Image (cartoon, rainbow, N blue to C red):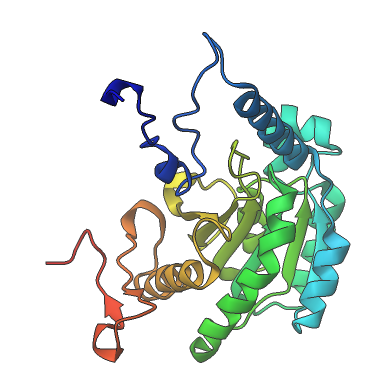
Length: 271
């Protein structure tokens, strides 16, 4: 038998098992194979469903209560999902009623807080449903030694990132942590984004925020995301700034290697 007649193993098969990326899909004539096309359509449907999924703030409230956390439930100025998607500006501020409710709560706590945590559905309520509670549990475990005063966790329906600045400002919080569902991708409909701001107030832009993205089981693990966020929070508290002036130089804990190799410097700054 000639070598040309011998079936050769597909060199891409092993790589396809290591990544959710759509690589080496093959072809049927000039088109994608049926299986690849159906998989693409299913992923596209999952992404659309994630965008339109209703925000289950009641389930989050119950989960946070079980963790011993107080919650506040608010709404953005976007009255419904259709408006939210067409008017990003309305998702960046609270509704008039929610603003009044938060002002009344803040008046009862004039001394403010060290940390305010805001959870918003963003473009994927699925992400916060799946990942917000376990992430906050890991964050609380790692932050016990800091002794910060935490504001009630604020749940915002139809919210975007900037709505956290208004909430943090009203609560007089030094540090703001925003958990929000990121724009779904074709392989990640449930990616959670973390946005951190020192001295939150209305009118800030993205240059004043630090972002940690892709927090999910297949992406950045909860423990490592909490470790990175706490580094930023502690450095911001010390240096009184956040955003482009604050770089992530956190030492990353390793899972193996013994105590002497338990930590390694950021790969960009390590010698």
